[in-house]
Figure 1 (cartoon, rainbow, N blue to C red):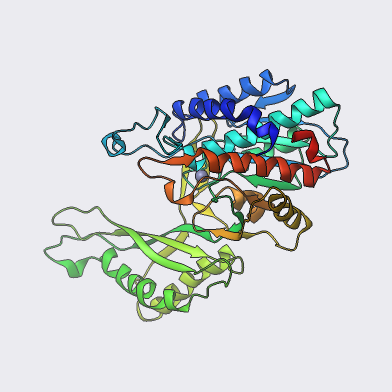
Figure 2 (cartoon, rainbow, N blue to C red; figure 1 turned 180 degrees about the vertical axis):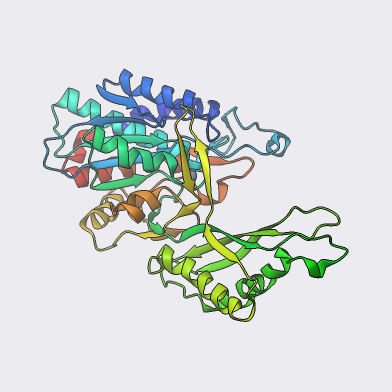
Length: 416
Ligand SMILES: [Zn+2]
């Protein structure tokens, strides 16, 4: 373990426990955001702020030579579920068990990793202040709202509005999502598609007088279950594409009336070579085919859109989707990350997440190389007794210091 990690180990544990004790279910991240702002100010980061959407960030300016590196994680958690499922622990106690695990809601996904990123930021700030070290590029610490509902509202605001406003540029992003101390370079895309069919109401004692929207949906369901899935291609690295139906609503849905509206929700996982237009076009093709033999057939397919509101009152219509992304393993940033981790005795493998992240915004939409790294384990995300192992997280602390030294050209002996 690096000397600097040894020095801050206990402080990091307490910091992690403190942020787990601050509930921050999506939409209620205010207290946690303000907590981080206060901590950034306490360590003397003059350029620190909360933006209009409620994201919090701090910037340490370098010499302008680059690379500009951004640490990122989300402030929000999912709800805790039934509290008794955590017994004998509790979601917000941040207890430490006899195996050296911190247990609490959001600790794996991803407060412990975010706390490590904060501490590496703090350590570098200290080195700059005390040892007169200069960074070649900017270092940004950022924690965003609204990651969990999968529409990237917080990250989108941060990258598209806040970063230009504050003249923040990032050449590389590190996500503190759980990776078991392996190096994650991407994930599949996911989107929720809403397909609606339209019919005509009639008294259901004489169904022939109406057009039943549910009946019109049947061939589409048949196609989703038995045709579209088998035509999907996977990706040797990212995994399989998939499609299934997750919900079906029929309206008005009352006795004695033929329904004139039917809506199904489709969960579609996809690859970088499948743009959104192509995915939606596959439905249009099916509709065209059905319309040939049925002049009454009317259907639409579009991404699920709904209004979201952050804790600051910022509102936006957002799509339920996460585009796929993949960071090139041949990039110098990636090679240096692996080298740095090996130099501190770690043996990470290249991995791809099964779940979606804000990497869809940084890498998928804005093409900023993005790397996931944290000692938290993926399997604990969104589970009762969510936990991280302290020793594994201290390896992450070591790892991030080593990575920063490698990427920013600093001498690691400063931190030994
Ligand atoms: Zn997460």
